[in-house]
Picture 1 (tube, rainbow, N blue to C red):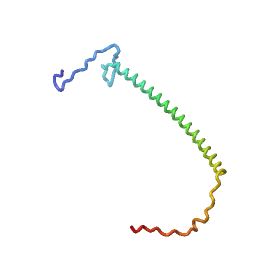
Picture 2: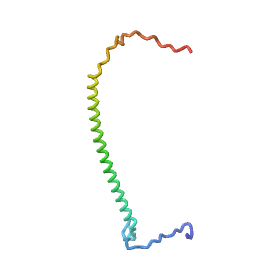
Picture 3: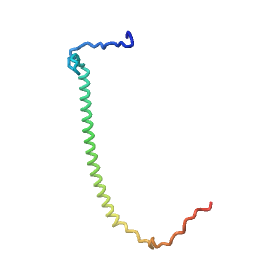
Length: 114
């Protein structure tokens, strides 16, 4: 229990064999905690997972790009073939009976009276 508002408990942590002494920011009486080592391992594993995911993404992106280029080329070839067939199978439309520029003018549009 706290004696007053300003007073706080000191952390009660016993020194274990896995802890070692080192200097940090000029203070020489600092002990390392095994949690830091475990955290370092977790960060390292996390980095490995990110690298694996990035490699997977790059692989999928390359496959998608190659697939897209191949099928775009195939679709362009098919479209060219169909256009070639269309010219020979379907006769062109007949010419208009008169030139559209020489057609009589239409009466001007009038709004209805109602």
